[in-house]
Image (cartoon, rainbow, N blue to C red; front, side, top):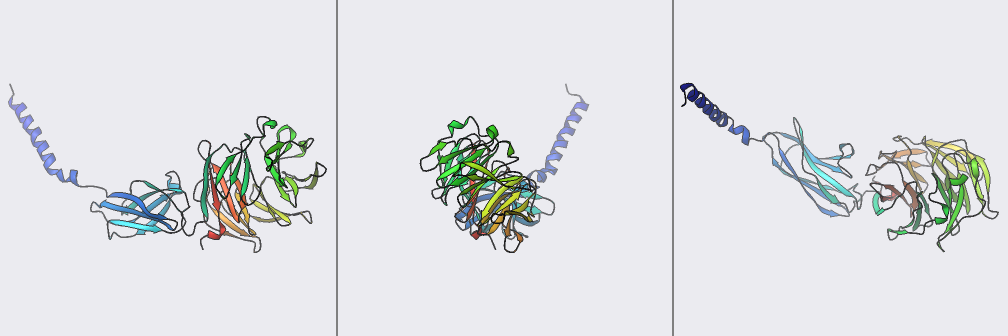
Length: 401
């Protein structure tokens, strides 16, 4: 049997909940934050793409700015680009046409954003595959499966490039068809090719050097598709540091940390030409009667073949967190992308001036990167994920003004 006190207590509870729901009803239906939805990109063609969004609910908050965030890789705020569409809200639907700096055949992620006086609200994430835009020097050429650890890259002509990895994976890149062809591995050379690979080409034969067993030279004839190893061609303990190869007037050269060697193909032997004072070479570019050499400290040196003289030319001015990549195209040097950095620069050998140009669209690991020039373009590839590689082209004629 209920006592008077229990009845009163029950009535008080009932009154309390009636008061709670009747007085707080508006708080449950009122939205504290605006609601935003990113719509799929439209009008995707070789001239660009259109980004779209709608504000579903403002929640009576003043919107002071709205636009889009665009990512060329995984969702990482540090690598996003902010595209502001407007400052005030005139319509709940908004969009913008991107007509520059979209990389052909690259996947993009986009989300809309709005800013109130107190906070920033971001919409859902959508993705689209770009078909390019008017002013973008970068384009995706190929994605393929391979292990490119320690890969060495050599261009044979304007259309064919050969790549050999330390794991002895050997394949051909056809720049006309954008196809990758797996070729016979150098099975007579042991299980691996050492930590340093360098190469040069003489006539129809590619010469590869690797530093196993005190340094060995072996060759691949790309017409007969046959491997062979010239006898007694080890340089031995004279080589120090990383080794880089190049050709000049049908003569092969190896550049080490402190010396330049010439390969005498007629007599099948090496000649030491010059002691090299700069150390830690990262890239060599041949230009007419000289060679440009980048070092790990980002200095650029020039070697004059005629006068046998080294000269310090300049120093790379961009971000310096590790080795940079570089191309030599039409008497201009293009350099940058130090590890995860994306800045890219142009150096004029005529005016001795550096100019920062279009940045690279993706963060990159800075390792297992391959570089070469062909068809007045630069080509840059790197590994991502497990046994996956991506190859980009860089066309200086499409640099934005």
